[in-house]
Length: 73
Image (cartoon, rainbow, N blue to C red):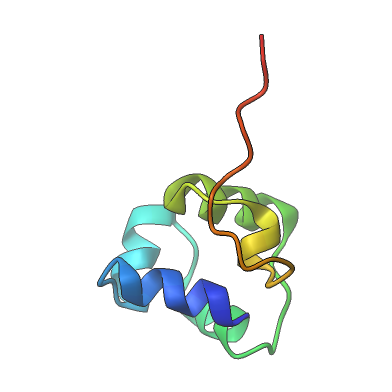
């Protein structure tokens, strides 16, 4: 998942600092970035909200980092 690593570096975060901000273990984040493991739905949502992007972008399904419009209440 190249976009996940790009986002982390763009925000000048280490995996440890991202762990502290999201609660996702550093070793898990490393496995996501190295395509050794797929994120859980819960972790995808945490990361998408944290970075203000879409799940599709994190999963490298699109090159568009903008999030989808919020759901209307």
